[in-house]
Image (tube, rainbow, N blue to C red; front, side):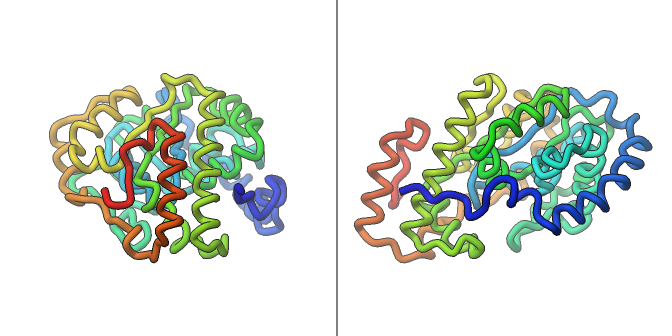
Length: 290
């Protein structure tokens, strides 16, 4: 059984608080989007993450935001504003504002600070890449309506690229169970919800060119952050200096936290995940013990 979203796409994106937010943000972002339009003239690529809770995307997006030519918002949920029919420069201004605020707070996510010393978080030298770290929200919303993806591309107009971070399924499922209290799922339901997101992301890939998606294992990234970050920057179309790579690598943990051991897994549920892993080539090699 696959867990469906608790709300329809329309109700999830167009609630009363959302309407108030749109009413407040629309004229504000329109004015400031126009004032800052000169900063957006050299933007070449829009980057969006797709992934699950605790996949490592917050860390990696914080590292990208530290690049002098990249600005990545921290969970702005751009799709929310695409649904509200905000224009390109409005959205770009909100991304800049979000990135600056997140940098001021130390790029904190779930109690962890991803502040990179000596680099450019929240600011830029020349803006070429702009984007948003909004993984679960994007997959949840796009699986309800891929029309939003087409509207995103039409609104942004730049080349749109996607970053998909993959992590041990047992850790992702455990994090959904522990962190997503709003969903009120037990561990079995969290398992079903996770694989529903995996299926949605795979379906989403069918509507996207393979050259526009960069898939990266978080465990692989942690093993060699400088090499993998350099390759990611190259995918986005910017160069990564040695100083930038060194400073970014200095904040990466030596090994990922294994949240699966924070949860009581039954042998039956472990076997259930094992059986599902075999159906997805990009998950092969992951195990409960590994």
